[in-house]
Length: 419
Image (spheres, rainbow, N blue to C red):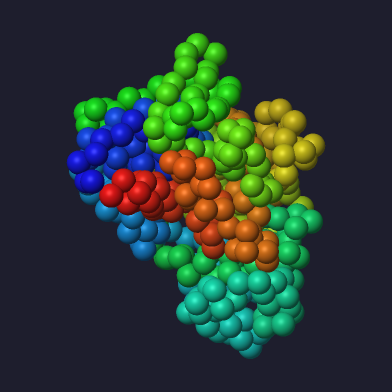
């Protein structure tokens, strides 16, 4: 029955949860989004800087991110989405080599011309392959077998090991195929940050009759008489249908959160500089720095909106138990300054005007060769329970575009079950 209206609870106010709420309230369903933090957005969340906002964890859109582009259009925000063609590079000891175009790939200094051409031909061929045909193949073994030894050692082995650590040898080639296939030379950014997308979803959902509760942590779940009973420290909730838009938790049949797969944590260091550091937007760091990548945001986005300051992100992936997760901002500032001096000999410590530190546990799943066999399902074995995290978007691993797709998929499955 299409006219049936139900009472739906959504735990988690990230992009996936907000999109699910947006879609379901369109059709008149009663929806309550419950978020434990004081602000919405999850890994796409923002913080105030000056007269605008910045992402806590760096974000951009690819040309092919059609789910995001459609949602941005629906919310009348297309004029805020700006695409540019920024430069990328790879940093080893002492220098950044350009790594944006086919010419750059072929001229990469650590490999021979023939070796670079061979390697990039193999990668292009892989990008055209159905990911399911290479699922279960080890990425590292593919690199060793198909790429030139110089390219493997200079570019891809450090990248894989810096990202996944001791799990690097177990990563599925399907994950890597999805990464290179989705890449584009043009990158997009929402002027005003992801906050305008989050605010647009929240406002529209509220106008459609939905509720959004902040600072409300669910401490227990149960199911009784075909209803889900959720308890926070201050109130109880009762829903006929429940969506858990949490990463990486779901709810088992007894109503208790349960870990589905092993995840990595993310650390983001946001530096405000008085002067530009490099000419590149994205630089993979293949040295001994603790950081995986350096993203000079203002080499893609006009820095006038940031009072002409230069915004630099430094990213790390690690495991939850890693010692670096307990480090404070002083440690990261010291490491950032050390890196900046190595990258740009003209860098002065007085350039660093401010620094912000953000950490997130369970930020990205580890896409090992067995992942697809155990892929978590959106529709739970518990009736009327649906779950979604970035662990559900395999072979992809993150991104606002995929979070939007997931939110739509969850709402579709729930609506189909109401027919």
